[in-house]
Length: 173
Image 1 (spheres, helix red, strand yellow):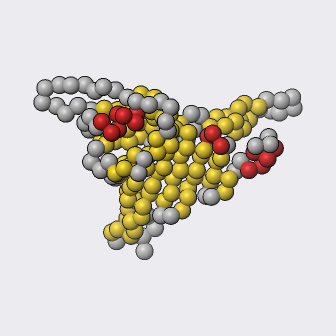
Image 2 (spheres, rainbow, N blue to C red; image 1 turned 180 degrees about the vertical axis):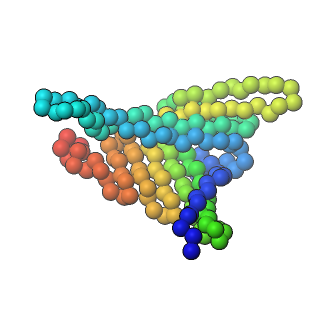
Image 3 (tube, rainbow, N blue to C red; image 1 turned 90 degrees about the vertical axis):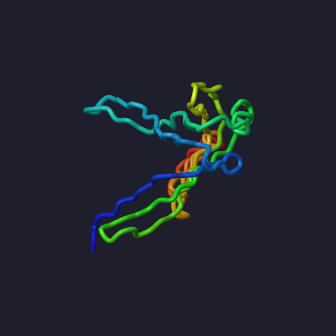
């Protein structure tokens, strides 16, 4: 039996506020979760250490393959949050072929902070890239919650366990 397992995630579909946008997006860049770390130095320590100090701002970009008015109408309003869902199929292979194929779903919520009017060239389809400030992100693979972050509610879950429960209790929130 092969010990090596290879995962492949090669395509996806995007939904905005529940509406299927199949074939309209060329690419989505999901947020990069970046932990802020604070240095700690003290008398008696032979070195310094870093400790968790929060999460850096989350951002997502979507490259659209043409002008879609329903997308730009939502992107134009910086006061109304939009829900994005990116759905993909995660395939697992080994030397015997495909072992499994399971859903991988990313959920995002936030407001758009950039939306272009596009570049127009003769004979070429216009491309539009929107940038979204994300305040909620969640990843579920094969029905299992990998993580969930809600910046405005101080929620950070890993494998379904809220790792900020004590913190919220300590600050009275």
